[in-house]
Length: 304
Image (tube, rainbow, N blue to C red):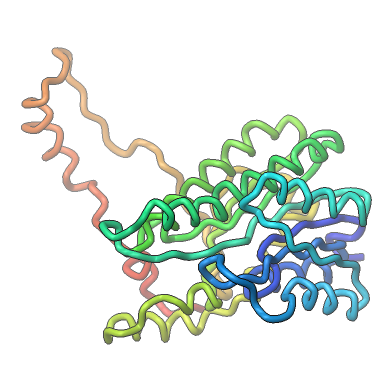
């Protein structure tokens, strides 16, 4: 008996990398899987040769599992609804939604266009909403279900040239927490996971300077398939008590991230003026200000 026997999962962006590993591991655990992938270029344009979704679905069937490919776009409300309907039509139910689909349009903020910004939010943030909202009525009716949304340390910590991506990924954290709060009464849980993995998307980062090259060599050690076991555990009944959390997975390391809470306070009986704030509050808080760290400044050790 697998942890996901009798359950049905939708995995978006499942044709390659992290999503592919998750789809395969869910199938190995007994789930029927809707394998969604557009099969487009990294920036969302054009179409790749063949069908990555069909290939992964075929892999699952070949190993004795159940799967169906889906090519709808998470960026469209109709696409999210169609993916969930595919699960219902083919397998009769849906128990887990893994929002993994992504794209990149990295550029420094002062050069970023509205289209660069909107295109990334459409896939990551609105896409996570579309599929989750489409599945929510089914989860409510059956009084069970699991959402897993992919966030990133680009939003949780920071990285250069990714204002669009960071905004979307931190927005997903807020979306996940809100879903967890709104749907806990129906035994539905929602969590966010920051995956550390060398994938097609990560391989697009610059590697021109010695510093960038060193970072890339470290990233190449991160195995995409290592994310999948944790996602399966979150989707299984054994993860039913885990909700509203932010996790990270980095090879054999699993992190639980903090969430924003007040760490210092300042008050005055007389009320604040701008001058008093500048004179007293900024200096009082200065020792606890967060530096402008990037993800690599925080995760400085080699992956285990």
